[in-house]
Image (cartoon, rainbow, N blue to C red; front, side, top):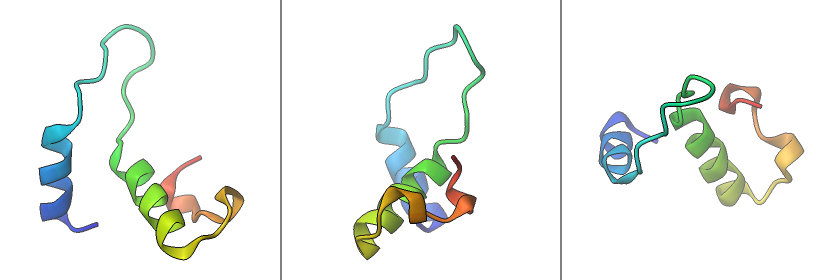
Length: 52
């Protein structure tokens, strides 16, 4: 996902709640979802750069 695409998508996402754990960067998660959808691979094969 390009930086421009991420900025457009991020503006549409709801704000993360404040209590609890500090928020994580959501971009790697979305990159992993797009990667899986594009390749059709199982979740266990998603690259590590996309997070756990």
